[in-house]
Length: 119
Image (cartoon, rainbow, N blue to C red; front, side, top):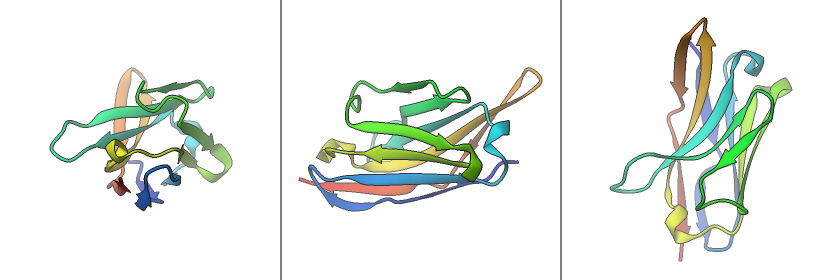
């Protein structure tokens, strides 16, 4: 069972920056991919960005050019650097880790961290 703990959320003005961190309870070398998801008020959870074990990344169109996902395997940590924040980025951000045991996929989730962008 992988436990994930997020930090770094808060209140920021539009145009500002925040960096979210997510620390995994076990070696991130055993984790195939990390992702950051968000759930805006009254909306469905959506994928923001993910990074594979090989370092490949993908982003939602709405954050391309503004957000950067990265991982530090030595620290078992994944980051989400968020620049040029907009009011519509306001959401609870959740860290996700994916690992495979044989052919079985396991998803693990953090408790979430609130990001509020004032306009």
